[in-house]
Image 1: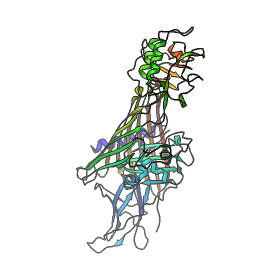
Image 2 (image 1 turned 120 degrees about the vertical axis):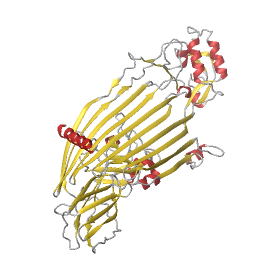
Image 3 (image 1 turned 135 degrees about the vertical axis):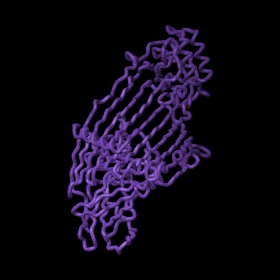
Image 4 (image 1 turned 60 degrees about the vertical axis):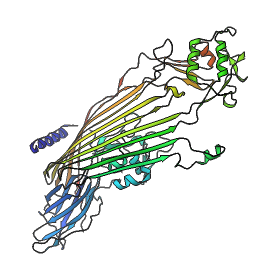
Length: 606
């Protein structure tokens, strides 16, 4: 097994050195420092042992000729650092390794008596002294408890607590916050180093539940070229992993109309006792993690369900009353001057789907048919002697958005030289497409997201390590039409009436669909040489993205007056369907890239 892993690492390195531009995202942290004695003299060739407090993973190396040590590609978490020489001992009981940071922990070894060990209880300062990049890292406790992370984009909202990060404001242009004054569409979103960017409207694809995120970092500028992709902020998340102890929890975040305060506008606009419209947001789940083999193999799984209920607000159309429909039906057998009779098929469809007003109303519906209230408007724009009653129909209706997410991880410490990390996320999101005016034409809008990543870390020597990563991200969404039919047509078209501000039919742009597949492979080789560190890396990405976005594929027909449609007069505006709902391919060719970075090893001298 170890030989196979070595060959995989070498193969990944050759792939990196043979490739040609895009870069991989770091998903771990580094720990560096210098070991000295009480006099300040450096201690070369002494043993430095690092132990992960959660998983028991032990790593060790010798200090260099100038007393330096450097552990790279460490999983985020807390570690014990111990230095042992012939009669010297020192270290830290708790060193926190943070995402995308190089932590400096300098050790002063104390003189120990023969056969004794000095117990060290201090904690190292978690400061990255090796780079000038501006970043903020949020740990598990903050991600779970801060209220701004409980809605919307989840933990990504915490980036707004950082200086230089602001909301997008009214301009929008993308999803997510604005970093250093740039548009949100300039941002880059990753999960465990895997590309998590929507190639259509930008923004993140998969949303990891707060309770399943181990660490979240936002980088603002001067970040390493291995991040690449975008000029805006770098938003990187890692998933929780199991430890040597079994841990489980159940949680619920609950918000509804009864818990929310009534806003001033609602209180002033409603007579009697004001109340909030329907809003129910219940996010609940559970998780468990622990060892499969102690110190070797660990698992973690988080499952969350988030049903949400709303009411779409404030939309009305003008439609006939029951009396009005009877009056219109009478016109179906009568001639009105040169026009008539009313087309029975058109009338039947109109009556079936438009809805019925409870009573005639003025206000918004007065004068919509003609200056004379409720007059019947002929196709030539003149008002006939006969008319029909119309009134307001409230098209507000219940609306839902339900999401289920399962987040899983497996960590395998094969040896002190080889570690494997695997992550799997699946998200099932279904809401209603409410772009149609009439609720009977609303259709489910299914969105499915899958993210998989496998990472292998190999230590060749204490100063030469390699990371190989393979990732896959898939997003699908389908805008569908309902089962409604129109006599004589193979699908229900889009029918619009300007005089009553009404539209019959499904979402005017449906059917449409989008599928996005991202295949990604990355290899990074880290080499420490004396006081300098070098990083060689390469990456390939393949995007396969079939899409169907033909607009008005069902046909779009618009009339100034409803009577024109009923008399079967040609519409004023026609959006003819194209020659079929063609599938387009936003597939990008295979892209490869290489990078080489170098710098001084980060050290702070006491």
